[in-house]
Image 1 (cartoon, rainbow, N blue to C red):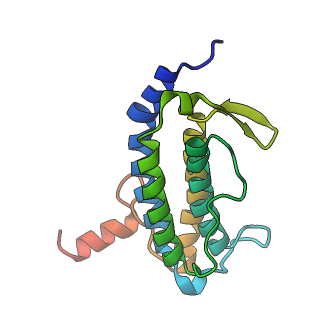
Image 2 (tube, one colour):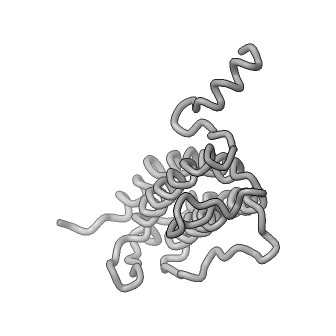
Image 3 (cartoon, rainbow, N blue to C red):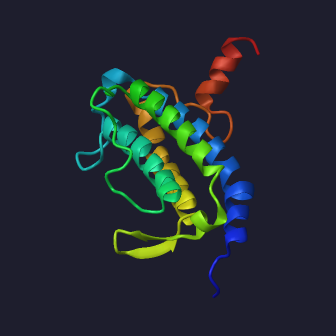
Length: 176
């Protein structure tokens, strides 16, 4: 197998990943925002992460993966949440702002930056561009976990890849 070229990496980022990243970030923000602030400690099982732990993990990890692409190095301490960010809605707002900044930076990366080999915790090395997909898949996985908590916490499940039951009910109640 030959190494990825700079041109291939630019194509992947510009024509494949950026649109999906933007769409998935809108969905992620809706799910983070849907977590009730008074139910942050909810967890379906004692070994499961609490809702707020998942909210924080999703927001931080996704931005960490994007910053890996941007900076050409995986930094486990990057994208830390400020201490003042506490509620799910504050985390969602921080996530949205950080994502916007990182997304803009992704649009400007050169092919050479995108093919730079990045070490992931000594486990594997991949071109920087591949961390965009890795981060997106990671977010989708944990967002699925978090969305399964919502109804149990008394929250409404937002539309994710189509209209949710809760959004359909709201639409019907509004007479649309």
